[in-house]
Structure formats: structure tokens, C-alpha cells
Amino acid sequence: MSAYIAAFYAFLYAPLAVMFVFSFNDARRNVAWKGFTLKWYAQLWRDGELLRSLATSLELALVAAAIATLLGLLASYALARHPKFRGRQGCSALLSVPLMMPEIVMGVGLLSLFSRARVPLNFWTLACAHAMIALPYTASAIRARLLSLKDSRLEDAAMDLGATEWQAFRKITLPLARPAIVAGALLAFTVSFEDFVTSFFIAGIGIVTLPIKIYSMMKFGVTPEINALACCLLLATVALLALRQRLLSGAQERAADAADRALEGAARQAAEPA
Amino acid sequence: MSRGGGALLRLEGVTKSFGTTPVLRGIDLAIARAEFLTLLGPSGCGKTTTLRLIAGFETPDAGRLLLEGRDLAGLPPYKRDVHTVFQHYALFPHYDIFENVAFGLRVRRLPQDEVAARVREALALVKLSGFERRLPASLSGGQMQRIALARALVCRPALLLLDEPLGALDLKLRKEMQLELKSLQRKIGVTFVYVTHDQEEAMTMSDRIAVFNHGRLEQLGSPAEIYERPRTAFVADFIGAANVLTAQEASGLFCGRLKGEGPVAIRPERIAVRYHQNGGPAEGTLRLNARLLDNVFLGNSNQIFVEALGGAGKRLMALSMDGEHRQPRAPGSPLWLDIAAKDILALDA
Image 1 (cartoon, each protein chain N blue to C red):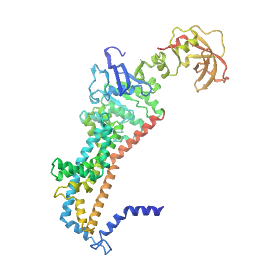
Image 2 (cartoon, rainbow over the protein chains, first blue to last red):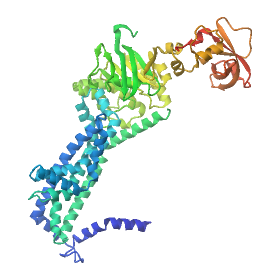
Image 3 (cartoon, chains in turn orange, blue):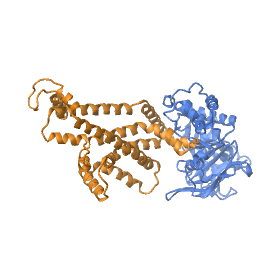
């Protein structure tokens, strides 16, 4: 049993481990261990093009995450709040279809859309494209939270006490949905940051994102610099994941969870005598 | 007391359907100032929908709601001088108790010192002073219920709606809270419209009870009126226990000794069970021959199930606190049932 588990994790993490180890290898080629060095990491910092592509990717991810989160919040609020509008079911289903869509299809679609509409390809078209890819992630994360809030009738209670819809949203819904909103934003950031296929299709001339840069570096083989770069990205990802986890188990979420539990308990008690 | 211009809230011909399902089929109801009115009925009878219509969470398909003579049509919940205590309290989990209670005052932008004073007053009213900095999740069900009450009352509404607020509490606490709610309502003089499916709860607290069934108002009256003069078989059966006889059963059983011809109801405690004939029945009393089916000892009383002879096997239940019924008797023993004519309650056909 433990052997199986060991094999499972080896299978899962071997590529990462190899990459990690060879990023410290004092040799040009990834074939044999020649000794420990940090020079590949130092070299990364001197590679101006690489750093520029990193900056591009970060900016792109920030803009895309902001757009995707805002639109996702509005869409999921509409879907969760107003159950009666016609075609809501269809809308909810259509929201998650792009999640399943092969990205290459989206890439081709976007490219033909942009070229048909004669939109010049630049940073903003790419940011919009990334936001579009990330939107289903943010919308579904936020929608789940809003639906559970709706069940607890907190907005009804706020409006009953004299709050306008906007006050109820700002004072009740928004703070309670914040962990889901931030989690959705982080997810959108990651989706944009690591995107290769779409960027490859519709990046205009002069926009080199980090994944595209890495791809072009790979044409000359997997160098230790790439390993080092990948390790840096890995650490950043782990940090981001940890941040997300922290947010989701933050104080507000704990309080909200406790309230959810109380509600469930109350519902159970109410159901028992009936 | 509900007639005339003194009504605080008036419902006129209110109907409501969800899709093709009619939920309310024309409700006329006037609620008096400072009254404790209970909407009572089984689940799905329309009582909660009525409450949501008053609060403004639903709009009627037809009919009007008038609060102090003013039509409520088109007014959103936050513009109505009506607050609700929700079934599951709906306290705001991210605010402490002070901010929960202060919520309605904050959205009205009252000055800070007035907010503080009124929150303190409201917490004292529900006996939870000192809980200001606790979070709702750390309270018990009964405490959450009181906070929900304080949060609604602190805004001094003209009308307070309560949607089965005690439904989630255990029986003992529920009994305590019933009496507490009633005395609180008397003290502050706010009009309460209370929704419950528990007839005992309705009897305990209400000035008047509106009995709902299938989207109709079956009967409106004081607890005593509803109990002693139920108008329909549904009301007789739903409020307290009753032996309900169809018109046919009644005429078969009493062989034309009744004035009316419709269905009737007889309360179990109004049936006197006798084991000896002892001459005839008293003046104004009808006597039936019957035999014993079962006798259940309930502690303070006995529930006696009998079958009336000549009634085509109609089972009746009698309830007696007389110690005579404690001694066991064989099923099938003959006995006589004495029922005063005035206790045979004529129902609408």
C-alpha cells in the first residue's frame, strides 16, 4: 500500500523534481550532474528580454483578472439574484461551456473574430481574450457563493430592515462573497498568466508573454535557465495557492461557515417534527 | 375590533399564483392596531405567502394591501414600515450583535449616539444586554431568535411580521418563548402578524387567529371563538381535537333529533361517557348507545374510543378527566354517551 502511494506521488511529482534538481546543475546540458550552482538563477535576472516578457505577462494577468472578476461578479449576481428571467437555465449552462472548450478552438475563433472585425491585435485585445477565457472560472466560483448566500435570505433581511438593493449588496452580499471573489480573481490571474495557446494565436507583433518566450527559448533545447525559471514560477504558484487557501479559511469565511452550519442545523430541527 | 377605519393593515381580495398553482384565492383581512394576529394553517395553505406579500417580497396578482390607508402597491420592502423576523433568523454573520441590531438604524443614517442608545434599549428588551461584541455564530438558537426580534423592533415598525420564528427551537424553549413574545407584544404595543402551523402556539399567543386552508381564509376570530364555534370541518379538526360527522353520519346517529341537517363537530371533552343508564338523559342532552373500543390513559385524563350503535360503525373519541375511567373495562362493554345539544356544533356544508 505505502509502496503504491510512493509510486503514485513519484509519478505525479517526478518531472517537477527533475526540473528542480537540474536548475542547480553546473552544466549546459541536462544529462549528468556536474555540481551545485546558482548561476542559472543569476543569469535569469540579467536576461532583459525574459524580464520584459515576465512584466508583460504580469500586466496582462492583472488586467485580465480585473475584467474577468468584475464581469463574473455582475453576471453571477444577475444569475443568482433574479431567478425568474427567461432563459436563466440556458444562461447558467452557457456560462460553463467555455470551460470544456478546447482552447485551440477559442484561439482560432478569437483570431477570426478580431481579423473580421478589423480590430488591431495589441495588448488590449489579448487582455480581453484572456479575460474571456478566465470569465467562466470567476463567474462559477462567485455564483456558487452567491447562491448559498441567497438561500440564507440575508439580502431579504437587509432590505426588510430598510436597506436599498445597493445597500444590501454593499453591506451584506459583497463582504460575504469577498473570499469567493478574491479566489476567483486569483484563478483568473493564473489562467491568464499561464495561457499559451490563445496568446500564441492572437498576440500581435511585439507582445511576447512569458509562456511564448519560454517556448521560443525551448527551440534550442531545455536549458538550465528554463529549469530555473520554471522553478521560480513553481514557487510563485505555490505561494499564490497558499494565499488563496488562507483567504478561503479567513475569519469572514469562518464566520459565514458557522452561520451556514447554524442554518443547516435549524433547518434540520425544523424538518424533524414534521 | 377589526372593522371600521381603525384597521392598521387591510387586505382586499388579494390573490396570488405561482405559475399555474393558485396560492391565495381572494383574501380579505383587516388587522387592528396593537393586535396579535396569527395566520394559522398547514404548510402550503398560503400563510407565508401572505406574509411575504405584506413585507413586499412578492406582489399580488390582484387585490390591494393598505397600510394605514395607503396602498402598498409598488413599494419595495425597504420603503414599507414593516419588519420581519425570519424563520431562520437571517442574522448577518459578518457583523457582531451590536451591528446586527444597529443595521436598520445605520441604513437610515441616524446619528451615532442615537443608534447606540436604541440598540442598548432593544437588547435590554430581549434580555441580551452585554452581548454587543459577540458574533451571531456564537449564540444559541433562542438567543439568535431574540436578536432577530431586537433587530426588527429597534426600527419601531408599525407592523412586525414573524414567520414561524420559534420553529427551530426545542419544545421547552418554544413554550417559554411563546409566553415571552406575548408579554413583550403587550408591553410595546406593536402589531404582530405571526405565522405558524402549530395550533397550540396560535392559541397561546393570539388575540385573533386567521385559519388558512388551500389559499382561503377559513375563519377569523379569537381563539375561544375559533375553538367553540368552528365554522368548517377543517377548522374544527385543525384547532384542537374534534369528532367531525358528515351530514349523513349525523342524521344517522341522532335520527332526526338535531335541528340542522348539515355536518357537525363534537369536542371529545364534551362527550360524557356513562356505564349505567341511570334513568334518562338530562334536559337538553342527547343520549347515544355505544360500545367501548379502547381506553388510553394520558396521565391527567383518559381518551376513550367508542363505536356508536346505529351509526354504521362510526368511531368517536371522548376525553374525560373523571377518575371513574381509570379502572380497566373489557373492549366491547356497553356504554352510553351524553352530549348536550348545544355542544353539537353545526358546520358549513
